[in-house]
Length: 462
Image (cartoon, rainbow, N blue to C red):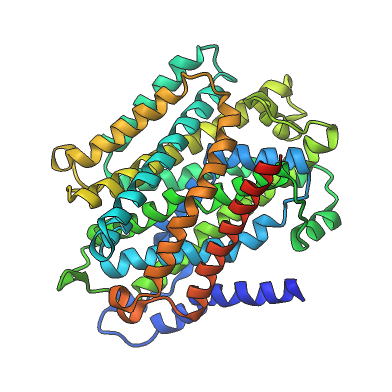
């Protein structure tokens, strides 16, 4: 019954993006011939933007490390999270996207206008701290992955990573960068391919996916809080909201009384984009857990201490190659480095949006450096501070999991505010969240809060 109710709920959310209805309405007579085009594959691909990029960034190095540790430590025990998170993640990110599209402002800008200064400062501080820690962990992961391929000191690779990311984010045109970001997500295909070529107990896998398993222990709650935190993460809220505004600017959406005058199908397009990105993120999580559970957990490897340990999960994919161990390391390194280049700019960018909106600075990746020095200054400083974190002696792989757990706790007050904004007619007018949207966002807040409280409770008893 629980699975049936879940499926109906997920279907209801997905129906908001009903492509068949989209095609039927697009086929209706219109004054513009371009609106008569059916969606099709090419039209669908054109819709993909902030939602897909946010979903791809969701599987950053922190996500890969957390999901890998989950599979290695608990086997299929937490596989159900990748299914049951879908409607939660969809609801939150759809709300964030809609908030940005309807208001033409990022989250910090809306909080600044409608809430107290203390709340604004608290929110900005929380997201900047969480993002900076995450940036540091991701830079460390990229450097550690790089060491699997080249014999270069960790510190040198970390510094190169930080410099390359700063140069890309500051000097590359936003549209060009967005196109690249979409394709970097393909690095995750190594996990489903591995899962499909290995003999898997699919009956057990589907059962573990549909039926939740729970242990009231510190170890279990620690990892599951990390799973929630790396999937439903603070930086994603701020990034997608602001990127939808960037998208409106890039497409020339006009403003009426300081609010965007939206084309007829704009919100539906954004929902399709967001749905595609979030489902892709959870499918990637599902396959990473399956692969690590099958290859690592079943062979007694229950703790991942290094990038080399994590890379062993991909060895079956390249077992027929000479020196398959190194090939697996190379493949893992390519994925982590590619997704690091995807995720770290999103983290730094979301901090920059929050700070710029809070202090009234000019913002946006569509602007040049001279037009938004404060915005790009936050990106540069955040990335450099994140780099410095790697020189205090923390294991880069373990840091990724700790970062995910921190994000799981930090997301709770932010979800509370998103829930308030999503149901506020004064802010969103008739585009405020419907009953389903509001219910799911508040449910997400409740689940994340309970997860964090349970973790803290067991920590005290631990």
